[in-house]
Amino acid sequence: MDPGFSNKSVSPSSEWVKAAGNQRVLDEKARKLYSLPLHEFRKEPYRAAPLSPDAPIPGRDLSISQREVRVRDGSTIIVRIYQPLKLSQNHLLFFNIHGGGWTVGSPESEEGQNRIITVRNDAVVVSVDYRKAPEFPFPYALNDSYDALLWTLANAKSLGADPTKTIIGGGSAGANVATVIARIARDEGVNGIIGQILNIPVTCHPDHYPSGHKNSSYKENMDAPIVDAERMRWFWRNYLPGGGADPLASPLLDKSLAGLPPALVQVAEMDPLRDEGIAYAKALEGNGVDVVLKLYPGLPHGFYIYPNLGATIDYYQTMVNWIQGLVKSLQ
Image (cartoon, rainbow, N blue to C red; front, side, top):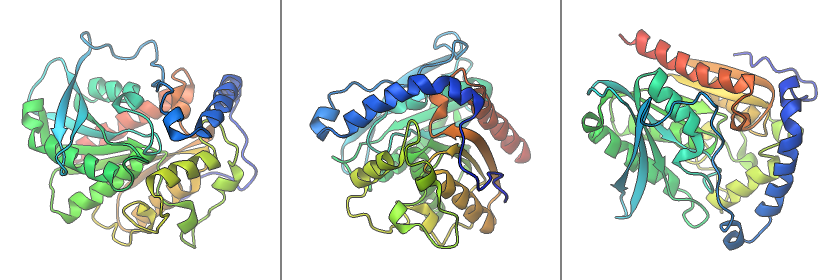
């Protein structure tokens, strides 16, 4: 699997250069926020990424609702449910785990993506609001998401979905949790998971990166826009305070990837997580998993928060097309 990125220094794409000025201001503000004590940081309101002007509209194109789900410790969490307006009991089911370094974000973090998949893939999308670190460190995000997945599968018919046509997906830290719960579901004999979508995935703690894989993206993208190397380490300190080499937190360390569902892995070149995303795609492929690796040269982690970038349009359509191809291949 050739990732197609050169060994030369990373340069931003021409379309990213146009967005970079605005993002530079946002990054400077973010670095100040991430240096605050957590109780001060939490006072800042979270703002989801803007939607494109042609994004599907609730009431006209789809419906959106929320449900409470009880998890293993007796607590309740929220899932956000996106449904086609013409509802049957046979829709594809997409279970999404949002990004945000296990620390920030909400089910609306990937709102554009979730609406698009609902409409273009005629799917029911369920996005989970797992509890956040550092108040709820590893394995809370993992356990909450897995419990919500089991609830979703058990209630799929009432939501209008077919539980035997389930895709698990997520972005960044959400992709990390998504592929791990796919492995847990495999081990526990949970049926119906036909694919996984791993967007700009976190796959390994930077202190435990395995030998034999290229590992230069943290250094090359130390000061990258949106998520730089230090912010990623901050996220890890929140989620996994002990910093251990646990494959349930760092799936690249997992020696038992065989039998996982087919995967779409999307990776950005100007991202500290670039190399671990590519390495994980190779590891899956090496274990017999069908993998499509999509690369975005000259773009940073989370570039899709800019909805009008051509790459963002491509990013969403790649997911739609991959889902369509996967479903067709199983018919």
